[in-house]
Length: 403
Image 1 (tube, rainbow, N blue to C red):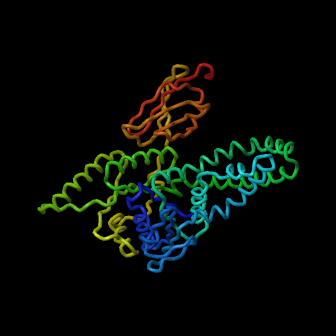
Image 2: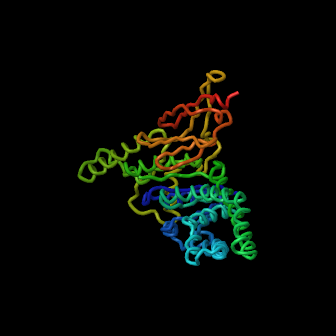
Image 3: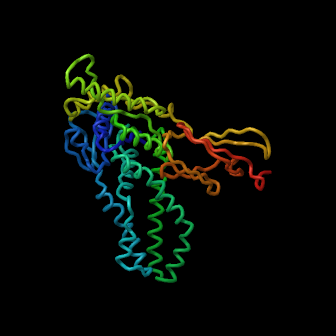
């Protein structure tokens, strides 16, 4: 399985250029690298100055560098078309109007989901050591990365729990033929569930996959970057680097209108970066006078971005645990706390709720169910505190469950 690096950021911050530069640098250091675009804008070919198709091809100007642009529409026609046909037949056989059946089988997000599945296929089947992915803008990427868990959750509830119920219902309403088609559809959905589980495993494994967030030193972009860091941590996806792109040069002691403008702009950019505390080291890339197009120009960008360092550091050295439990006291007098490590901003909106043996954590509208350790399943939530490093939830033993 190749290592996967996902580049994302707010639209227009230069993530395509930095993804291509990273892949070119990896190839220049002797690693076979594939750079893939899932961004609907498909500007990767422009950055590399080559024509790209849906199949990986080697870039002529760089040994060991391969590139392609995933065609989500083609993936839908190939992989989802047959399954939709099965579902449409089953629904029509159960008495659902043909037009309604067509609408019911159009799942939002399926194009993005198949694009991500194609990335995993390329990472697991190709000769590349690293697959660098130029993702879409942040909002689309967050939705894309949350799809495997969301889809898998739906399928887990449907199969096999309700499979017999639906099968029996169809047998009574539509006859044996429709039941056979339902079985074929259910088998196809089960295979889809297995693919989704593999996707979730890849995304949450820091040794297989990590994200590199690209920003420009502007307050609006920096605020979105903070929210993105929180959302990715909430999904269990690790960010291994934050890159600030397009820093204007410092004019030093030069005078004149242009020098004054550059000095003021750089001062504002430095102030924005100084406020991004608690997110680790931020790599920087200067704003260049000419657009970096083609492999030689991209290697110059990579040289400033990584210097003499390896563009692909060891993931295991920086991975962290999301949950940590501590406590004191004994019996019903004991008090416990659960620390959930997340980068949070001062204006973060937090909501907590107990759902069975899980803790429902909602941050800025994004929700995740956190499975409670066995000890805390027999406890009552007493409160929660939030700081820039995460959330600390208090617990005490539930007398009705505590022995």
